[in-house]
Image (cartoon, rainbow, N blue to C red; front, side):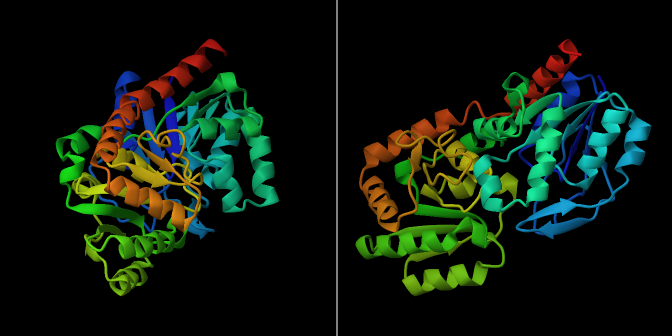
Length: 364
């Protein structure tokens, strides 16, 4: 079946999946992007070998994320005449595609990384929720990044039998190549991500401030960029802790940053998943996070490859101090992290797309 995957922008953790799916579907797979990149992204990475088209959609910022307005999607669909459309979101081009599919006897698959928690914290309007209650039950299958996404689909009326998990996947092999034994790493903690309020960097800095009072030889690695850059660096200087700022690091070089540190602090206000957790585990770097992260209790398992803690500064400080003082425990968590990331690969992500398509084919 000729299949179109309509999504927002190219992402490094989806390129290999698209490439594998394209080959497995004998090149009858076409990825359509609303835009080449969002204004707040600095990504630069090689695109996969698969058929792709960039629409002329205009991105606008609503809340903390970008969505897309009118585009030439209908013209593209009329030309391509797909039998299946995978909708990677519910922006205007996706909604238009949904109705085009319904009038063209084209099957529709919903794809998302959202969770009930992330949507609640995002503060969706009544209109947005009503739209989901209308659209989701009318989809033919569902692709979710996590078990929590599957629960979200079910919340809006999806049949669980039609749901498939297609995980986010990074280049695990690249991280394995750059791996260093955990107790030989130079930095104690790495902070990595977009420097925005939702990533709760001030909470991490509060933790570091208290930890530094107990451990004067503490060393911090800071990676990323964003509007809070000057504020974060100013706070680190005021604390007096030893740190190194690497700036924004492209996806193909990020592995060396994670493999230079013993622990990754990942508090968040609302991360539907959190690919940084994949990166950290692939580096063998245990993750300390909270329930707000989609990866929490799925990829990151408490006391196995990291910790899922309540947002309490003292709890985080005690746990980090304990780990940094226990080479045996830290090493065990590191080994478990490397093992836990194995299923989160592009082959499994692509396999789920194929399963969803086969399900549709069998249940026409």
